[in-house]
Image 1 (tube, rainbow over the protein chains, first blue to last red):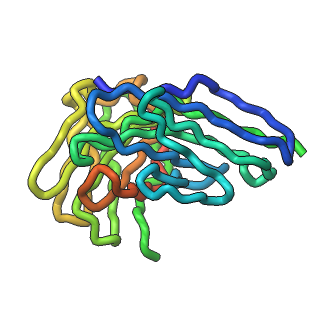
Image 2: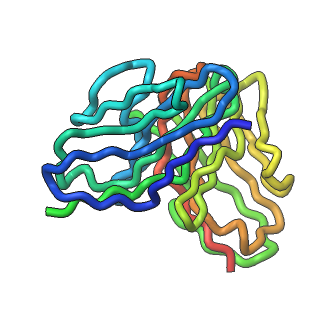
Length: 110
Length: 113
């Protein structure tokens, strides 16, 4: 069975500090990995996906198949980054929906 | 607005009742989903559906049933509501394919008393 693990329930960093949200996955095939974000009082939205290899709002994530990880990073945190972040995995052609990690609540302190 | 919408936003009801949550998307997507977010903010897939197949997460009780009158709608019916059904339910849609972005609705907060 596939699984996504986010070990940190809560992560608090100061503005301007680097941020790394950890994500590890377990899946026997070739997964598609995503980071979704939920800002306060807003709906869940896609932040980035590994197939795009892009940087969104300064965030990047690299898929490391050897370590089965997809950590989210940003070199300099901003207060508006405070939100709930979910790592997610898609498989089976997408028909099974997304398997989410338990989420990490990121708080950026001024 | 181009989006995924859900009604109602809040639903408070008594144990044992039957209720429905509606979901509509005007994005032209062919696949829709229902997710449950529990009190600890954990999101779990309940169903995924397109016009050809329904995939049910095996952990979902059969009191829950999705119904799709057309491609743009996937409603969630819940029979004999229990206290443990209290959660936020999210609808989502996408085009078919594992790497495709899912677009989420605003959620429906269900409280069972």
